[in-house]
View 1 (cartoon, rainbow, N blue to C red):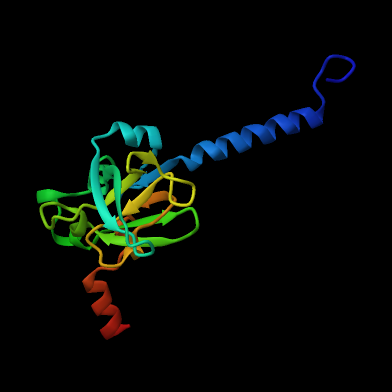
View 2: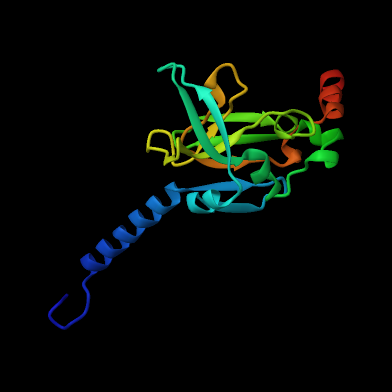
Length: 183
């Protein structure tokens, strides 16, 4: 406080810095979902824990131990951003995909039919805990677990974003052929 009872610029800057740090820490515990239409929805870890939980087990390639993870099926989250599934997943929609990004910049993709129970029995999990305990900073707070993959290369740690890119960004067969022949 300054002598006249007002707050000085340094104190205001310090408070702003503390608020920014608190907001960044809160965002670390959230993931952003983006649907085909560009709408974005954010889910906190607490919101993910309140959704119907599934569990999957994978063999850790480093320790050779079996790890059990709990969380929400990725397909269930995709339904919340109006991603086509079931009977609506046909034709051009079969070319749509999901991109998952981690805080460290690591990204992977899944074709929509891989995640749809009408096509396959895969259980791709958006995990929020392992053996009933919250994920540590190295893995989480949110992690993708893909138990059907032989290698855990698509098991993204520290997930921040899950997006279904707009179809306009994916070239269709006709445009590829036209470019190829008439280029």
